[in-house]
Image (cartoon, rainbow, N blue to C red; front, side):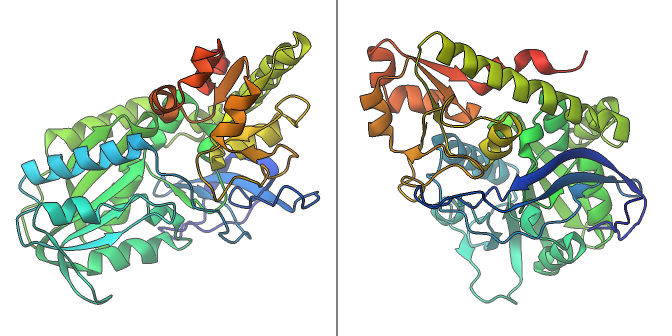
Length: 376
């Protein structure tokens, strides 16, 4: 029986809800000429029975990922979010802001400065707005991470936390969201418990389409203001209750989807190869790593994955012999199909790389290939 302690509440009761076996580190992109096999590590998701936080069981890897190109969808969502926060009166001119960003990029500091905010410099300086955009999930100690952020909030200030929703992961079967280095997968239900532990309550929430469904919550210290939760928070909590985000059997649906979708992608690529049709991939993202490895896909099925990040070009996908190439190399190969591993990139790549469709090729959304794999 697994012995585990929750990263947030320190509870010991919970369930393994997704086990992807041994996988290479999702942020380790070896140089193309470095021979394998690559080191592999357990990749398992555990659901705490006490607070409901979904989390990595263990992670012996270290961050090494080359910085990726920032997707236009992420930039647009950040601008939208800052606008909504300002419209809610939470970002007044002159407000001091502390930003905890993701190691993958995506800072809001420029957008905040344009609205008259000042960025706090010292690590111990209090701020009117403490912002975490996809950053806290990278902390192994979730209790310490939320406590640190709460401690930086000045009296009367607000804590803003943005996260990829566990409800979205369940609704869309996004099992590839599980990766080394991402320790926590939040529901609003679990996050409310974490915030309560540091004397905060959620007051407002905003939903965005990024990654299929992300949430930005605004929380305030209970002793600063009357703890009133608006309808946006109540709606998200009610939706999560319907989805049963705390039910291990419901979350275990991801295991079934993982097996079915991996097979679906393998079969799709094999059918292209057997028909003599060249298919490339696009987006050397961490989410593609477990999918390619789980499906047993190598360069015989997928000759290359293109990516706009110069830091990833000349490397290969972890656990495979599939090279990462530039978009220019992909265009020159004139593939009949390009499988896009991140749906948020579809609109951007069709606009920025028109040569694919001009040459008769087509962009294929990974979600379309795996659409029929959800349990009924």
